[in-house]
Image (cartoon, rainbow, N blue to C red; front, top):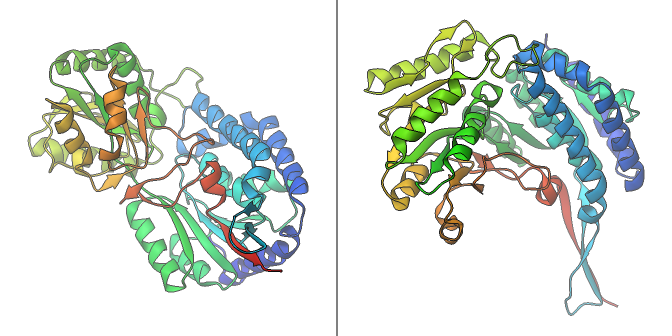
Length: 435
């Protein structure tokens, strides 16, 4: 179901009217509203998690964890927004000089289905606390989740018009961006979606923040804690059936431990329970749609036709795709040079750290990289060589409200979360006073 353009414009007008009051609402009062949102969120977390599992297939235990993480994000900004939004004095020759952080107005969010609560909350909560209002186009395959988030905000007492769901198609996004009330847009999604939104925003000289795809390298050096590396590699690739932009996708294993890692990884994957996402014991559910599983299957099969080997798994049953390991990889194969948005790990051996860094950087994406080693000082000295938005040492790449999140290259631009995230959608205003 999509809205008529008049209904969409009416919602945008409502958001613009609400902004005029919301921008003048004292920050402590805004914070109280977000405290109520957090309380309502956690009170109904089982209901929300079940809806996530129903609409996009995420195992219920992971869906509950996603909702709880949204609560942690609310807590983080409740505690830190006052410091982040406080004016900053700057010493100059003038009597006074400082900057203030003021809201922009109505923001458009375009969000994906893979983390249907988390992606929305990490955009909306800091933006609303900064004094903006939100209209949000969610993914078409999570319509009930999209609407229930608006209901959650309103049931928590957030004034009407501050956050509104736009059940529109992708084709209608351009018209929304062109609406004069829309001041900026944030998109989390595919590379192509990012190009389309950024192009449209640029036509109207409106700011955009893009969090796009990734093909993260997961590097395991010969001196690494192998058991930890293997167990982390399972979670890094298989969480949410591999449907994550920051999932480890290209596993670079030093050749001296390559065979051992491969065997341990096979054993670990064989122990994962695949099944009904509503079963609390399920670790791998179906992918979000059958066509998405078919796309992953095609990427694997094309790679096999080019010489790759399926070392484990590789089977698809409707939307279920087995945890899979592909070996004998070359850089021209889809499992290396495309983002594989499913439970498929591409394993490649490397000889030296120099070679691992080169292979890691041989990607049009630059979202994050994980490196497992005991020689932390060497990696710290070479962090600048990784063309990434994040470097995680002895840990999988993951989002954390306390840390800025975003990428470079074809992974997008701008940052979410932390102080940098709340400053993306404010007017950083310079004030100078001379007496």
